[in-house]
Length: 255
Image 1 (cartoon, one colour):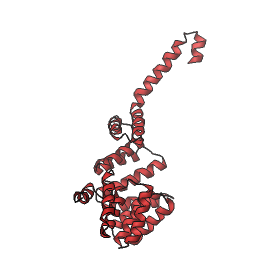
Image 2 (cartoon, rainbow, N blue to C red):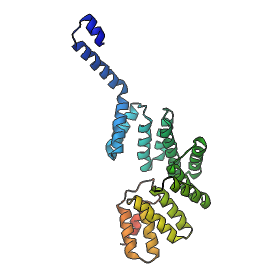
Image 3 (cartoon, rainbow, N blue to C red):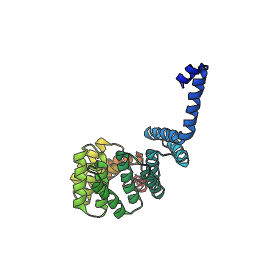
Image 4 (cartoon, rainbow, N blue to C red):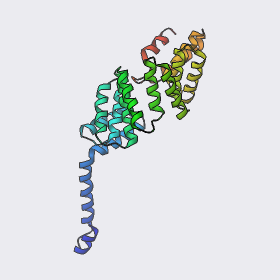
C-alpha cells in the first residue's frame, strides 16, 4: 500500500486509513479470539470472576481458542458442573490444539469423569493417554493413581503415584496421593511423612492438612489436630479436592 501511495502520489494518510481499516476488520473477525486471550490472561492471574465473564462471551462468539475452552471447563469442574465442562472439552479437541494442550484437555476429561463419579470412565480416558502418547507427566500419573486408589487397586495406585513423584519430586498432589494410600493401609507414620512433604511444597493444600489433622487426632494430639483443621478450613476447596468443605467444617465445628 505504501508503494501504491507513492506511485499514485496519493496523500500519505490514505496509507494510515488503509491500515486502520484492516485493523478494524481484523478486530471484528477475530474479536472472539481477542476476548479469549484476555480471558486466559485473567485466568492465569487468578482473576476468576472476570475470566468467567470473558470466557462466556468468547465462547458464545465461537472462539477457536482451545485454551479458552479448557480453562473455562476447569472453572466449571471446580464448581462441580462436570457435564458442561465435558462438552467444552469435547469442543476443544475439535479445534486442533497443539500436543501439549491436547494432553491437558484429555487429562481434564478424565477429571470430569471422576467428578461425575464415573471412575471407570476416568481410568479409560487416562489409560488411553498412556497408550496414545510416548510421555505423560506427573499430573496424569497422579490422577490415574488416585483413580486406581478409589478402585481399591492399591498396588497399581502406589506404582503410578511413585512414578509421578519420580517424575516431579516437588509435585504436592502426588505426595498427597501417597499419604492417602499409606493411611488407607494403616501406615500412619509413612502417611504423615508424605502429607508433610505435600504441605511443604503447597501449604494451602486442604486435603493434606485435613488428613494431617486426622492423624494428629488419632494420636490424641488435639492441639496439633485443631491447627491442621484450621489450616484446611482456610484453604479453597472445590469439587476437584478429595475432601469436602463439609468434612472440614464438621471437624471445625467441635472446636
